[in-house]
Image (cartoon, rainbow, N blue to C red):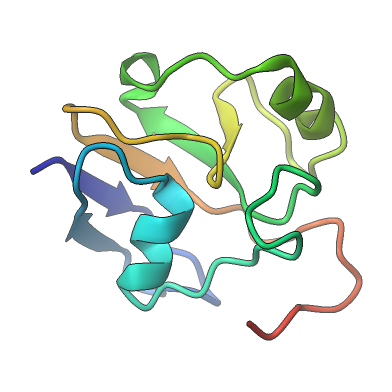
Length: 112
């Protein structure tokens, strides 16, 4: 089972964490199932950027972003070339290292 190394994030996991996730699951769902409360204001429908992550290792193992995701990513805070919406990034058979940016474009955090 692939592993996801989540780099330290002051709000979500101050020490960083490594989790296991099954192939075929989105990064967002894997984080949520492991009590990492990543924002997902649009309920994972690819309509916002609150679940934005930066894939530091393993980006090429993910399917390419579709045009809708690419268009939304242009609005994400802290956008980098390795940025993905975690609700759209489906885990394959390779380990990943991700970083959750400290901020989103939301003014208030959604409590899901």
